[in-house]
View 1: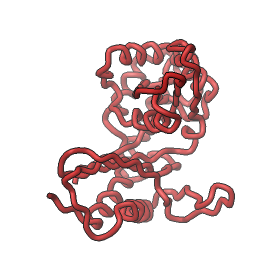
View 2: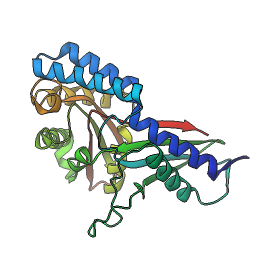
View 3: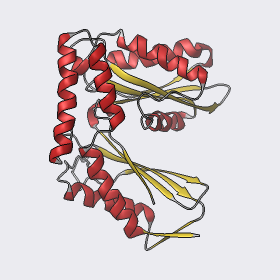
View 4: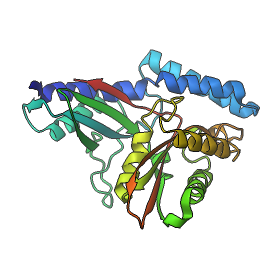
Amino acid sequence: MKTITCQEIIDAVAKLCIEACHHLGDDVLKAFEDAAAKETAQGGKEILKLLTENARIAKEDNIPICQDTGFAVVFLEIGQQVKIEGGDINQAINEGVRLGYKKGYLRKSIVGHPLNRVNTGDNTPCVIHTTMVPGENIKITVAPKGGGSENMSALKMLKPAEGVEGVKEFIINTVKNAGPNPCPPLIVGVGIGGTMEKAAIMAKEALLRDIGSVNPQRDLAQLEDELLEEINKLGIGPQGLGGRTTALAVHIKTFGTHIASLPVAVNLNCHASRHKSVLL
């Protein structure tokens, strides 16, 4: 059995927080370039070039891609053959976030109580999603999520009879109603099935997939292509200034559900689709 200390986890999370906020993924940058080559609106084309330049400057100067460095959402995959020493893993994750946001001079955006609205001053607590998996490693993914795009996300419990057409209508309308608020071009994460909370978590997990990757389920891959085409016909465009690039990708995850239920969750991500992972 492999032993991993809480200090290793703290150090890893702190580093991931900074890297995720400073370095945009290569898949996102390629998506910007591909979209700029296809974009017909001059304003939209210029915005895509500016987003690429912004990401380059952030990486070279070690500064955040966006002023909103987000809510730290952490995905943990803990191997069943791992022994964790030196404390509580959830406290270690929060300590890593606390140190990372302080060391990286990242904006602290979290209030300790949703009604009292007092800023905790260190961007904690973070949200942690934990899964037990086979093996002797821990995979940690830090995905900072900005408030603007999170606020425009939505969930609906459809009637099963509404079927795939009802699902498509809800997804497209969610993007349409969001307009420029979530800072397009977007990555649209979708969770279909499960229960209410399972659908929402799947929608967020779907945002972690590389842009340009093909869904291994053929029917979902086809649905993603159809939805992306329809969403880009909305004409919202980069930063809402018009154009054909409202979204860079639609990613769908599904799960079994109750015969009486058809939950659908849409988690919108702004163009700064940030997430970094490490394997301990």
